[in-house]
Every structure is written in C-alpha cells, then in structure tokens.
Image (cartoon, rainbow, N blue to C red; front, side, top):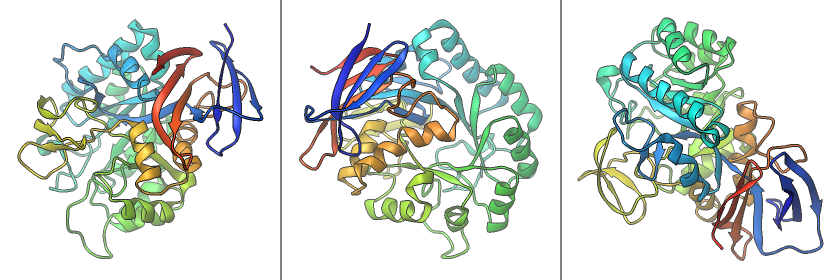
Amino acid sequence: MTQTLEGFGPEGVPLRVRFSPAGIEEVSRIGSAPDLLLAPGLIDIQLNGFGGVDVNDTDGDRSLAELPPLLWAHGVTTFCPTVISGSRERVARLLTRVTEARAANADFAACVPGIHLEGPYLSAHDGYRGAHDPDVLRDPDIAEFTEWQRAADGLIRIVTLAPERAGAEEFTRYVTRRGVTASIGHSAASAADVESFCRAGGRLSTHLGNGLPATVERHDNVLWPQLAASGLWATFIADGHHLPAPVLTALLRAKGPGRSVLVSDAVTVAGCPPGDYRTAVGGNVTVEDSGRVSLRGTPYLAGSGASLAQCVRWACAGAGLPTADAVAMATRHPADLLGLADRGRLAVGARADLVQFERDGAGRPGAVRTTVAGGVVRYSAA
C-alpha cells in the first residue's frame, strides 16, 4: 500500500515523500507542508543496548528482537549492535546471539546490516581503556578474529582497535581487505602509529575526543594525528555529556562535517527512568535526571543514556550545528561509510526508512512524531 509523509526536509524545503514497502517511490517539492522535519531514518553504528535490552549480556532475559520497536520510537531504523571487549568465548557467544536474532526475526534483520566489534584489541592503560576490562585487553589476533567472523556469519562490519598494539598494522590490513572498517579507539597511539594505521587501510576514529585520560601531553597525543589525517572519518557522541559544546564544535571544524558521523554509544539503561541499575558492563550505574549515566557514586561516565535522536537534537540546539549537517551525520554519512547505498537518504528507490520530527521555531528537530521502517509505519506519537 502506498502512503505519503509531508514535512520540511533537512534543508528547509517543503517535501512530500510517497512510499511503500517496496521503497521510496517519489520525492516531490510542494508549496506548503506541516511544521514537521522530514528526514531519512536514523542510522546508529554504535549501540550497546537500549531500554533495558543489553547487547553485551549473555545471560539476559530480554531478547535482542525487542530493540527495533524501542528504537523506532526514537527515529532509529538501522543500527549496528556493538559487542565490547571480552574473552574469546564470551565474544563468540555475543556475536552468535546477534546472528541468531537476525535469523529468527525479520524486523531485527532488516534493521541490522552489521555488527560493531569494539575491542578487545585496545589500550589497557587507565583513561584510554574507558570502561573496558583491562584483564581481557590484548594484542590483535587474526585467527581469533576469523573465528569470530564465522560466529557472526560475516556480519562484523566495524572493528575498533588500538594501532599501537603489537600486530595491529597487519591486522588492520587483513580486516580491511575483507571489507571490514578498521577504526581507531581507546588508543594511546603515537603519530607514527596513526600513520601506519591509515597506511594499512584504517578509515575511522571511534567516538573521537573520548576514550582519553583527563590529562594528556599538550602536543604529542593521540587526538591531533587523528584530526589531521584526511583519510580518517570520525564518530562523535553528541549527548551533551561526553563532549562539551565548544569541544564538539572545534572537533567538527577540524575533521569536517563531510567525514563526521554522530553515534549514541547508548547502553542498556538508555531510555530508562532515572535511578540505580546493575548492568553487565559497568556494574552499578546511576541514570541521572539529565539522562547522564555514571558509575554509581562517582563522576565517571558509564556510557551514554541518549538515543541518536536526542544526540541530533543536542547537536543542533546545544552545539549549534545546522540541522542539515546534524541530520546528514546521523543518516547519509554512516550509510556511505558502511556502503549502505539503499538507505540514509530521501531518494527514489531507497528503502522507505523515514522519520518525522516536530520542529522548533528555528527549524531544529524536536520529539519524534512518526517513524517508518521498511515502508511500514512503525511508530506514531499521534
């Protein structure tokens, strides 16, 4: 059945999009539109969990198939479940859990084009390692990764690693030649390490500006080489807690919006009411009224409590990004990075993944009003 949605596109032009489960059939400019922002469905390439569902909990009683409906309410129609550092056996179990969910649930399969493996080939130094368990962090192992890729049925699309680890250059070259995006993160790499990573095919920086100690060398640190590397894209957590507004603005100006991607890095308690929780990763955490997630009784972040839609809103209203840039960084750019030519854009023939936001007086996105995934209205606030 063919349906239509109307609203102002990210560039401020009034649009009508005609769609069906077969895809977007027509995008037309119209004389007037409801005061809503109409955009492609959001694409989150770093998501650890949401609404009580945890990608990294092997013993959880919540099915991963519950994630798409939770995320549709926040305008997210595509996401990469993110598996973090663990033992060989634990990571294999988590990857298998994702592939089994894809095989059992068509909606989950349609939303999940791949998996982001964050670690375990990361720096074990405090600050750089973030919340990753130092006891499981180790040097890259091609045989181990190959075993995991088999467990994942070939679905690992991004792997985050520290280029200063022994064997990292060979590992980066190996995964890149097999279509996996190698990303630098949780790393204390030198400028030479970053250069060798790029030479080997590395293409991305994971949550740039985070995964760092509170104090680093003023000039000789891992941040500047990544910003200077023209071949590296970068992801940013724009939840209002991980990066202050001036920092996000400066990083985006240095990297350039065309090579930048917004991610949520949401954890299982994202979307949950304020309070204290126990999680598989992080242990005892607190969700504050502001949505900030911290290790209980400390000032330290324990992941993000925001959805990607909330990140887009904060990037616009809190950090002053133009709406068109913020939307592109959460739709077209991640699609392009992963080679997902069928989504992330309002174009005839693309998947009918759409989201309508309320708009404020400046045309910036507000609450999600409607989400369409695969040509079907999956969420409506009306």
